Image 1 (spheres, rainbow, N blue to C red):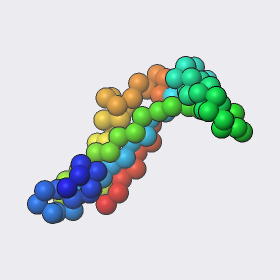
Image 2: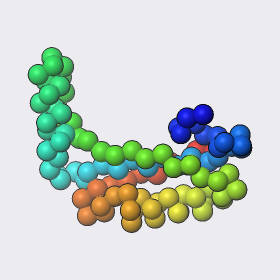
Image 3: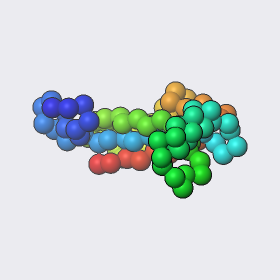
Length: 95
């Protein structure tokens, strides 16, 4: 069974949190610029900008209340997964 499936080893359903972290508008993104340049060299056209980011999937116990899970994961995103000075984050909870 893969890590990305929303079931644990016992087959019980789990809640899943998805955290998307991206640089704030106006923050320089040299990796995004390098990707943009590379895809242009490969012949992709019509691309005006590329911004890179991070994506996390977090398995949560089904017994966790959905609102409590959202608050906990948002705190984790704010304090651990992102740099709030230069990055924004978005949290999604899937039951």
